[in-house]
Amino acid sequence: MALVLAALGIYGLLTQQVIRRTLEIGIRILDAEHRKLATMIGMLGSDLAAGEDVRRVRASFEKLIAFTEVHFATEEALMDRYVIEDRIAHKQEHRKLLQDARSLAASLDESNMMLTMSSLNEWLLRHVDSADKELARQMQARGYADASRKPPPSLRRQSAAASR
Picture 1: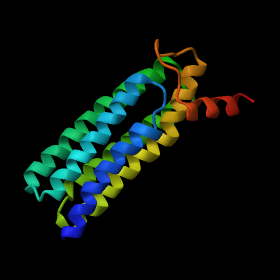
Picture 2: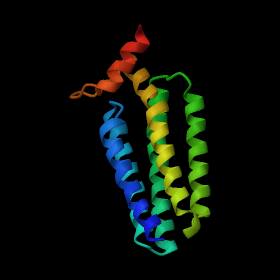
Picture 3: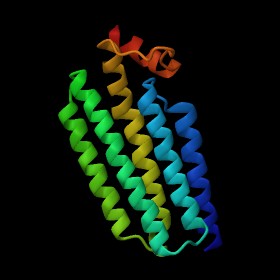
């Protein structure tokens, strides 16, 4: 059990570091929200690793789900404002992710803690790395720019390759 709890703590740290360093998409508001989501997942992992009672862990999970809803609303407003292609599919993915997160929260117990943390980390990383990078690329192609910031190099390369 100690090994499982230690692994949960490592998951949280890795998620935060990966989001901060490699998965920024160049849209300041979304990058900040992604960092907050990673931090909240890390805190949930810390609660699990510390052996917090199920009520506290569920409360942390509910806060994560509530902020995820806020984040998705921000993304969806930007998608509509910049008339992003495939925004309907992206919004449907948001609904599915929320449904999955609610299912994980409802079935949370000691026997599935690793699976829960692994699932949360995977959906955040996968969604940011695929759908959100494409969202940023399309927004920037349609004139969006943060006043004081260039897109990260990974997005500039991706955008340059897409325009060839």
